[in-house]
Amino acid sequence: MNIKFVEYKIGDLKFSPSPELLENLSNLDSINIDDHLFFKPIFFKDSPKNFVVKFHLEVKTEETSFFELDFLSKFVCEQDIDDGFKESNFPIINAPAIAYPFLRAFVSNFFVSAGYYPILLPTYNFTKFKKSI
Image (cartoon, rainbow, N blue to C red; front, side):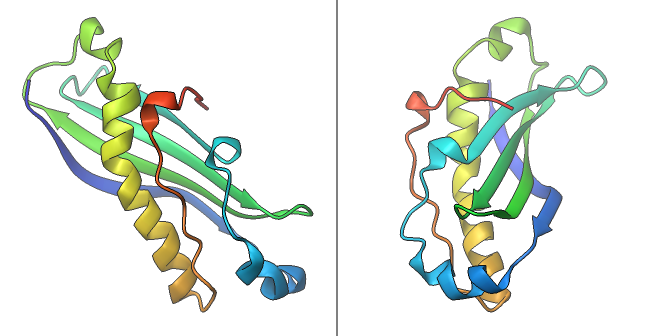
């Protein structure tokens, strides 16, 4: 089955910088992605050839959450999606791994464009990632 990543959309974005954040943002060395990123595949009854991987990212300091994002990655299949496909590794490992670099770039570019130090999400091996929202 041919599967294609076609686009991403931002579903929800919350950014609330505080004076403490402005001083400490450059000190965020790395983010433990396991504690801040969740995802799940979403399938549509009325569109059986499409599915979306919904990522939810929350970045916070010890005191407060300052960035929250829902990132929707759309995939199109040449055939209708069946239960075998839904239970396979593709929607829970491969598709998120394909879309994740776009999420990483969006987050980094968002912070740079907003005038802050970039937040660089680490690379991730999705075969180990089993969380969902």
